[in-house]
Image 1: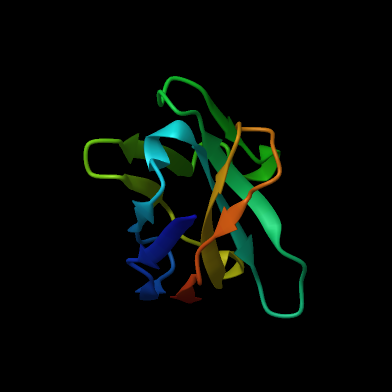
Image 2: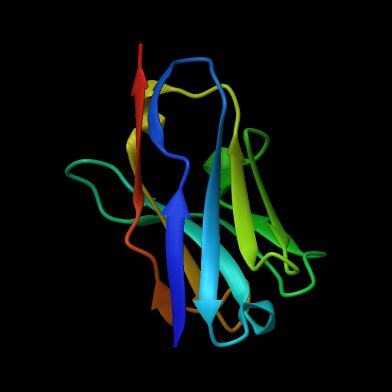
Length: 119
């Protein structure tokens, strides 16, 4: 089992920045690719970004390229999602997940952290 706990969400103004963190425990997190998803009110959960075990390879949703940056620190068992130039449509619950690869379906999920962007 891998336990994932997200943090860093909150209420921010449009145009601002935020860095979300995902702390992992349990099985060796450094053996898993890490993903970020989000779910806006009334919408389905959608993929945001993923990073490989080594951190060398990343993948982003086409709509989010440029404003989102995923990174990881395997020594700290932590994955980050930097979000710049926040928009109201970024309001969502953001979930961290662990998977076998950057294109694999996640095996483990966190509980999510709420991000609310005010205009």
